[in-house]
Length: 423
Image (cartoon, rainbow, N blue to C red; front, side, top):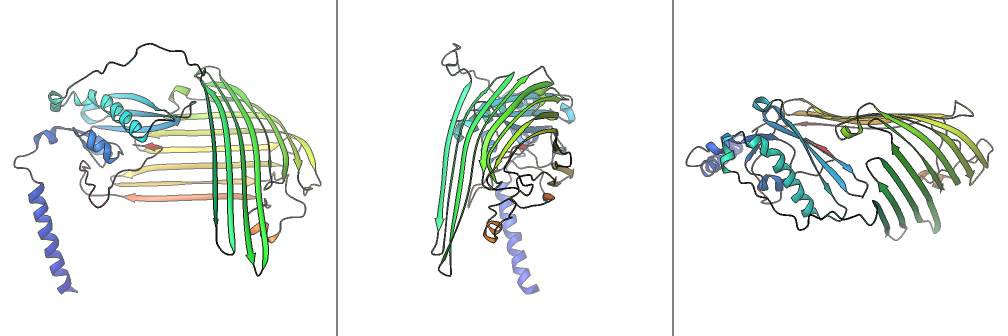
């Protein structure tokens, strides 16, 4: 073993020496040493386009760290928000910049907007470094400065249909999903409508016997919310649909509600603490008789939702708690708790964990006769349960050089991936 390790170690030492000899410049890179230290999870494209900063691996080594969030817009696009936060000699400096990616924007167009926004936000900090004398500022005159009226009046329509088919000698499966939505979102109100259809079918051939299992659902819904200032909102939702899985031939709901956000809605990309209360009616017409000997019924119900979200340099927290019960019998209730936490414990070490649990006592639509073996195995019928849960966790530890400036795509790229929330 020792005889094998000696030549391997010698080869590694030789390769390392050659690489260092190639990488070291003739003179000290004083420009790079004077560059701004930036902490942010970025792609190789950003590193290649913005070369006048040092990308550091740890937030504590940064002069500026950037938190990036994204939220869907009413037009079906995405609003990206960048929070610039100064540290060390830039302590107390902070800026917020945003851009909107439209539904028909190409990936390259989104990347160009991201680069432009990042450069605008970094200029304030780069201006206070020796590299500022190498910067140039240019202005591209827009093609038109005329403001035109939106002929669609903020309405956005979207339709989609997806199909899937696979099979082999003794098994085949097909799946079809379609959806149509019409939404109108302004700063003070939100109106969302949608229609959806879902059907899946499995066919089995076992010992010359054919088994078929079909599951389908349909749903139409309308949601309207009106803002009542920086903290309050009021509105309601209504829906009508069916589900073979839930033994629902027809379900109609009407749920008005009111919401209070402890923090102003303008800060929603960084922090939220929302309390939403809804009360209304639910009508159910069942496919088969339920375990409560019902074929149809009209029920009153109410629900309370508490949701907390925060994004900071140490990580992010997203927790929600939802309680619901039917008014005719308070023992018919449902309590759910979900959460996700991502935290940097110390240099190089971060941990994330998430999970949820629901305490279920409101399965009013369960079929009286139960489910067949095929329906159980294929999950085609809702089964009786008192709880559901899920959990996830992860641990990441990184050590080595604090800089991550270099991009080398040889034999595959090590570019970053897209994230909903990143730092």
